[in-house]
Image (cartoon, rainbow, N blue to C red; front, side):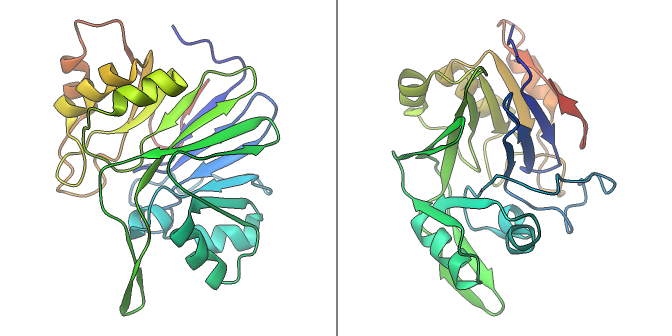
Length: 236
């Protein structure tokens, strides 16, 4: 059973997640809010966000990134090419990094890890290369190690993420079609050695047919906890 120690995770629909560390650092991942049919419309983000993490450039992960960066003034962390695009929009407080690297911010160490997907930015009528897709391992002081996979398929090197970082809580896509479905996600959870899994990236669009119930079925012979918050609900 995961010991949360004051850590709070709020699912905001699709892949958007708001995290508050035990020390009070506010983190937002993959801000797809205004156009997200699953976003809890009454949910209010903190006036000041500390970190905005972007896993890749697809619209359903960065649609509100620039607006949030201007309003809430977080440090934006993304793979180098995506970070450069953010800078081109007038956002200077940006950290571009790459796969395998880590970045320290106050009580949090952010490590960028591999994801198997695609990544591009649709900016008006132009499409831009957005670097490789990524996942993030988030290690905050006095908290379980978190893993947000971004959009990904199953890949065997998830075992290396387990060996290197020992994540305990994972935010894993289950929707299928564009990412893993529930069966592959269950295998990924095993590769990663997670104690708790929070399914994400499902139910937003008709193509995303995977369900938490299916994930639970595939994990029923294990001791892995499946936490399925409603959009806007906080897990502690």
